[in-house]
Length: 194
Image (tube, rainbow, N blue to C red; front, side):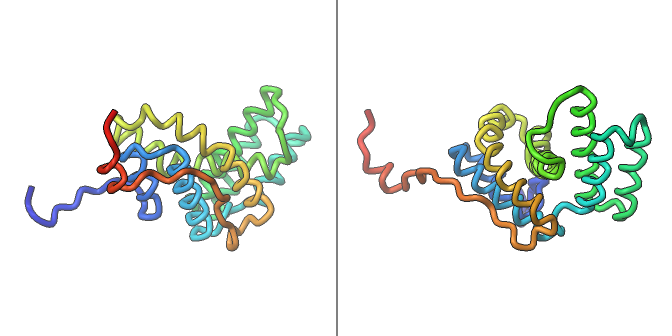
């Protein structure tokens, strides 16, 4: 391979650490910690959940039965247009569509509409920036993703509840995850093999 060749990973710079840990088959808790840090950083840099008030108001009207049929999807697209198609507005639009589908199927939301939107938004943000790209570019590592998703999901819910309270995300920080760090190379080299 010629010198100075760069093989791009296909993820944004703030998502390189979780990708590197997944490719290195790190412990799920360590990967979850990196993912949560990346989500919080991404939200701070991009202005949080863009259009949260408009999306929540529309979801509340849909939950109350005031907006029905295809009108709700047209109004969702109008909200995205109001924010000039911002990436986070598009992700929030897909999260809102998922919540509407759940409401129409008769499912009850566990918290408020704002918390449900924030949680679905955070999960879709992780999928958009990391998991979907791994499934496409690194299919060998895709089989280990459910273990990482299972560990990160409860902590992502905590982060989402914080995001619902402060939609601009300027002071948003990732929740702490306790995990035992991997053993250093020197310890591994000097330990007996059984």
